[in-house]
Length: 399
Image (cartoon, rainbow, N blue to C red; front, side, top):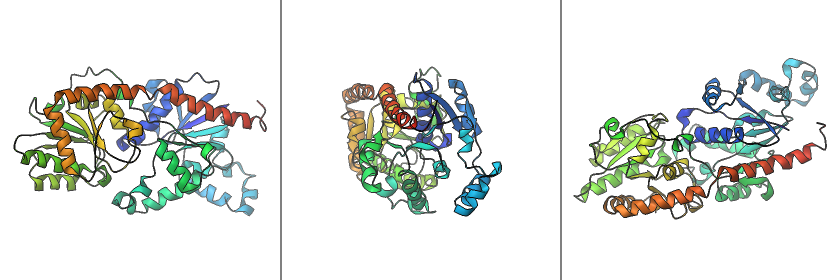
């Protein structure tokens, strides 16, 4: 069976892009009897996987394809347009290569334009339902766009992949999906976290932090739900205690909330402790993790995110929001704090500064926890999904 693997996104999108890339790389290493063909609408993405020996085709998905789909949805026109090659359904893009099934490695709206091909769909979180108050969900009809995708893509999928047990439960409960069609596969750390760091890059020099001074690290885009403010408030709390000066290094693209965070830092009197280093390339990211006091991730969205696993891989302690379902990812290998309580985060950072042995314990537990999520386990679930579909496919298809 030929399976078309679709991935797209922007490196600036952070974890979403990295996770889609991870899934693509994972299948490229599989010795499955199925044949995998790789597709992306972004030429830059095709180049990004060339180094892994993955040859990806680019496909067009624009106004013409959307217009043809809209016309074909008119039943009367559909019968007429089907006679003309120009008006073939979007599926023909992949059918001409003999593709039998599509696997979307991320929540792509492309699936909404398919008429004939079955697909496996990945839906990472339902945070727009958990926290619809945030402007990035509430404004610009983002909530409606996510709901439209969920309601129209999930029910037609031959299988749906969630990122956690809680995510699986919420998909079934909120969208009425059959229990046996929804699977969960743990997220995995970015490739950069698993590669040897021999760059010689000095993160303190780059961030203008005194040598030896402790800093916490938070790689996250500047959305309100990322909750950078909690870190700013905790730094002020530490400074007010009179004996702790801890820096914070923020990296990631500005999605509108960076000026607000910088103003908050100035108002709290810790603007000298807050260092924004912009977008960090993959070869510099390990140094920021490994030299930090800890990864601190106080996000409201989850429960699973990629940075804690990256920190585990790079022997960095983790402090993360105590969200429902978070223990399914971090177990007992992280310090958990309420995303609403600056004093709790202040105390957690204070402990890490004052108790070096606590850092050692967390690092050891993090490495152990990471080993519980293997690529072989992820592949086993995907193989089961593909094989189950293939058995049905053979009732109408001749090899």
